[in-house]
Length: 316
Image 1 (cartoon, helix red, strand yellow):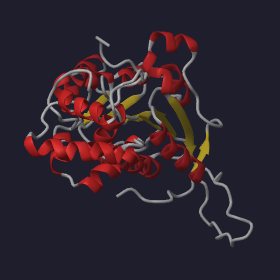
Image 2: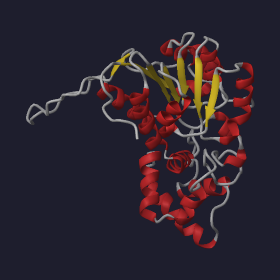
Image 3: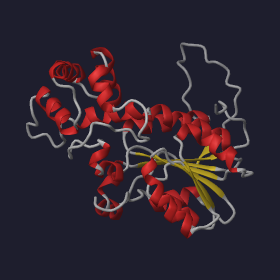
Image 4: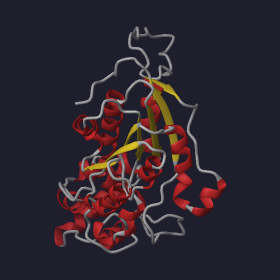
């Protein structure tokens, strides 16, 4: 993709958020500003979050086009509540999350997210902290195999971890294509597989480097604690690990979690639902969007509306 990140399910996101003039909405994943611009066009204000410093030129352009209606805060999801508090706004009417890595990040070889382009083995969205190279060059076999299995759902995680540890003794990993080649050899080559053998390994490392699932959980809890009654939460995910977290969160918080076994006592639940589901299940991209933007193929949108009940867990 040669252009900026195309916002997925844009029409569905705006419909679920239903922003209107005077509303305040948090775009928790600013990126190139696709969702933000569509929200601002309705007359609402946007507090955008992003931990990636490279998005600043896009933020500057949005600020120029919508003066006084937009601000960007460099923070991960876990900083949502603090960012809103610092904004001085009285109420939060909506929050939208677009989870995962953006096509902009994948297209920048120097970021090290993709095994399709040679670049430094980095993967840090913020440019700070432990990199993917640090992990593959220093972690022991057990923890490395664990994240490959947990975050990448890689069935051959032990074999890959063994190959990585053996190779790094003589030559530490510094480049993306180098790691991809080692993983491919460890798995016996491509053998006609539709996806590259390193796909799951790179996904696992990216999630671990950026604590993506931990940040998603923290962001959902922060939105719950910050949204005003009637405020709308909209989340777009791109793989099953993310979607399971969002589905479980909204199912629980809306009071729709299944009961316990008939053979076991059920604890009395005294907490009232903090959300009402906007619709059952998840929405997906239509045929026209799929034809124009293949990235939308795995996208799932879930949404809910905040009730007046207290948050189940206060944001830190």
